[in-house]
Image 1 (cartoon, rainbow, N blue to C red):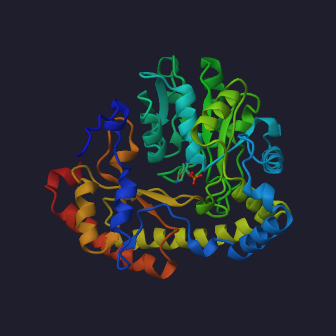
Image 2: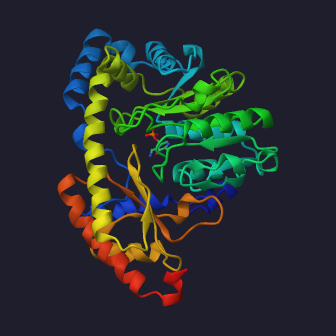
Image 3: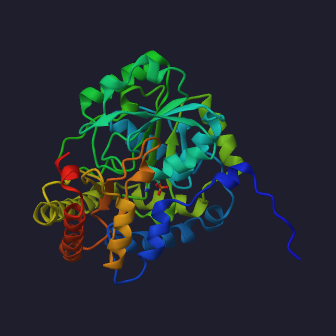
Length: 402
Ligand code: PMP
């Protein structure tokens, strides 16, 4: 006999991420999927990780397989602190928390900063996984307006900022749009947040994937004492390692540690030691440029395919880094309906609506240019371009003119 299970209101409100649902469909090998943000598996440094694993199991097998401190493996925390310091954000290792993927950082920040009804400022659109994570704690999201350059800092009025628990920002090659915030806007954002007493949470998994543009200072480096920052090894090594980090000031840091203790005690000792062994001698400085070269090439191919196959009524971002291009179609097209037709033709993308905390723009979609190998990008984009052209042709003439 089944015992009745009464779900918590929190669990009842949970929905599955639109991307994860699509990923299930796109596992069929014949589907060319621009949907998931999966790094290209060809960039995973398998031999290097193999050697590091051997070394860890030879040199320190017991420690690597034992429980470890919640804060993380000390040498890896030191390494992160040094790397951030070299990039212009001087932070001590004592403020670095190693997490089980930066996604866990989002969960811990939700747990420690959000009460039911708390105002949380997010970008328009924002990272779906963060919206999903924060939603568990039932905030009142407020959207920060954005334009072609990302967050429109002129629109960050005292009224919008007033009473917010934090603002969640993705200044580098944002997921989902690929936009990057200018230096001027970074400075304005941090100054306004400081003046309003609103902590800035910076999520930066793509900062090192810059394709030629100059390096811009992180928001953390503009306020190293007070900034909250998240980084990840997923896009520069491999996401299956599930390794990221959060930098936070006291007293938040101590609360994040306690929340993590309750969640999973600590991030796996084994993966932390393997990653430390892999990166300790400067490996990333030779490895990241190879990822950049590949992704820059694929980004270029996708931009060319957009120009060639998409009708003039569609517009898109031209990212200088990261993994995503954001496409806006004419009003009147709902990309969720379009996706069903695309999947029937063995191509996939992510509809834009779930990336909005408020007022979803249903005529938008996200394309990843990193997962599908170069030779399939053109094929998939041609199919998608035809579909978009057909959808636009089916609109009433007045809708396209608008
Ligand atoms: N933040 C952003 C903006 C992301 O795009 C992702 C992964 N798609 C994450 C956080 C989570 O990354 P991970 O948990 O693998 O570090």
